[in-house]
Amino acid sequence: MTLQHRDGQRFHFDAGALCLELLLTGGPGPVAARYEVLDDARGLHDWIRDCRLAPGPDVTVTPAELTAVRTVRDALWRLALARAGGEAYDPRDLAAVNEAAAGAPLAAVIRPDGTRAWAPGATGTRLLATVARDAVELLTGPYADRIRVCGADDCALLFADTSRPGRRRWCSMERCGNRHKVRAHRARTPGEGAGEERAGEGRMAP
Image (cartoon, rainbow, N blue to C red; front, top):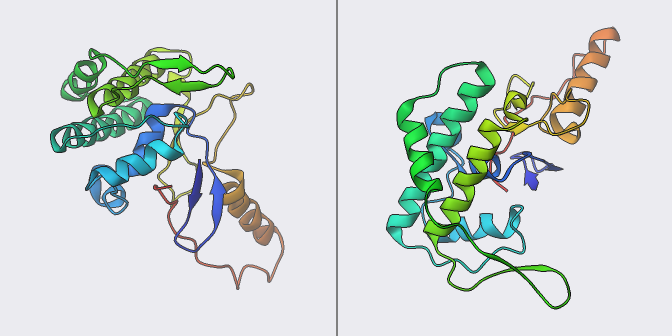
């Protein structure tokens, strides 16, 4: 996904999993809440357009379904942070994800030209089931131990490192990785640190 920081910089971000991409829509706590876009269905539709489901399905979302998406998203935040920190899961968060995953997911179909499309009748509940099932696969699969928070002190983006070496540290080399390289260079070069620009948080919305 392409994200835009508040300073105007655009950069590519690979969350490594659909469920972690949902965290870009906001979340619990004062930091994530600043990026909340699921106040109405339009924010969810924008996310569907940009996430790895693209070309996304035409989803009908009720207010109750939107509330359920926010609830599961917040649970996913806490579960992913717990996994990244080696902490125990909250049973209530597991219950929220498991309940959503038990529903029927979105149905994919093959077009005559060989591309993927989505069957009619997509709902917010089916979308949520698809995301929740992805979370179950991630948290019980080979990349569960590679769920990480970006290594920058002022970035809260979470990702699953699906690279072969498994040494990814940054949300994006274009953003936080490059900032780290610049700071390291200035630290090694006397006199160049005085003008270092002030860095902000990683943007959590596409």
